[in-house]
Length: 155
Image (cartoon, rainbow, N blue to C red; front, side, top):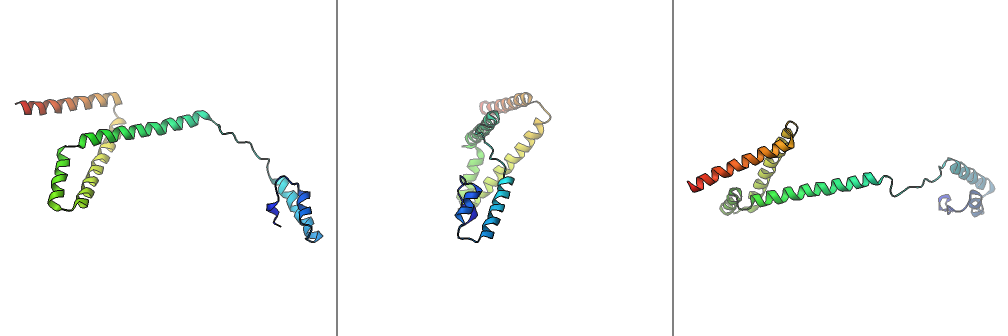
């Protein structure tokens, strides 16, 4: 019988009795090893499921905040890209080349590259300018672009 198959509720002396078919010398060695292991084994620590509930709550908030940022970024970019000149250019390139997967790979790579450029530039600007100032500047720039486009349409 294996020593490690002894139920934990039995003491070391009970495990020796289970090995009755072994020679007396082997039984004594098993008892010594068992006693040494019992002495070296620390008492089982009680683990609490709520070690620090504040940390768990903060991690949940961070994860939900990350998903919220991801979702708003996806929705904003997706809606901004629908029907714009880039999508029309991709449509025409696909029709001309008759190889949609190559056009998809090229367009996707270009969008990833421009997005990376925007993220890196945004991180750099955020380290030097206050976020509220950046928001206002972006709003003013978008209003100026809208005014120029409206002037061209009406003029």
